[in-house]
Length: 403
Image (cartoon, rainbow, N blue to C red; front, side):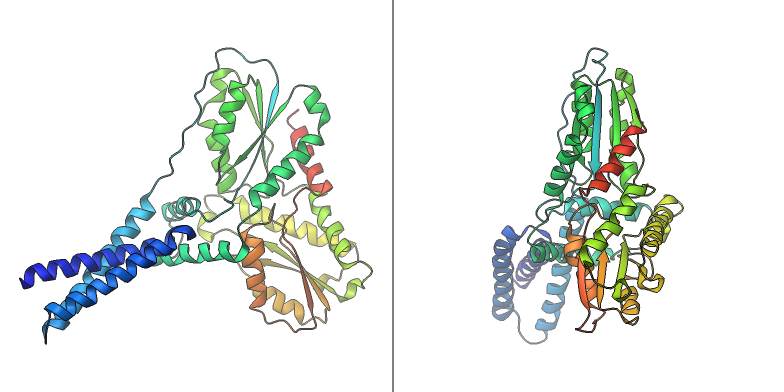
């Protein structure tokens, strides 16, 4: 009988470990269910222990509970991290050579409006594949719990919605393309629709050329992934030419847009009293041999913005650079240094972000808060370059290189 009770205890503990992982990683609308299940398993463990184990057996039973719990935890973690996204792509139905029009495929990172684990699972797989140090396997449910909390704190992400607005602004700014019969397609790397789906739709719509416009600052894992998605459908086999415009890091109009934004934010304030932090994203050092241009291009891009700000009479010591992750100096370190230069206002420009996101709405302000700035220093944020007229001009110039 003790053996049967031991097995039951281990199974209940296993279920407890399994439910704890689900509680940490599943969407917020499922938290209540798993909280109830965790409480039920905890109650069951206590009941079985009290009714069936006495004296020295308690120690052995407790060890059994721990082993069962860890077994359930690891099984749930493994299943969760191994899950694959299920997507159905449209059929390639094209049978002719196309009608000669151009498809302009605008693609960007994308961020689901609500918490979704799958984009992060894909990122972690990529990190693991390239041997980039990340959160240890056992503690990854805690990482997903943190991401979910950031979504809750931000009230969701408007990233995709904003890009739809930017996309419409770009399309409206190119009436000559519409006159020529060009069609526009919006795609996201981490949300639907993806670049491969929209490329299929462009081919099926009769396009004879696809212009891939990556709305990213640098050539990176993201831009490569988008190109590979388009390549995977082999548009050339249908007689469709493909032109890739390149990332935006070297765009003079985009760089200048941040000078305009800074001037708008300070109004008539004395520029000598203003500090500016140019925030970059950063990539792991381990990726530099695989994607050697990303950190280099992001640094050159921010250096160019910095030079333009200095040329516009901001003090050199008051315009500094910081990284969100993977690289140094960090946001916290850079802004702490900046606060010691006698500034009265600090502008935090997330220069590498295209639209408001969890990065800009939660993580950047949290990094700034860690610096414990004096209360008399005002801080203002710009979280994106978005559809600023000069950002749209930058995209138009990239498209023009393919014409």
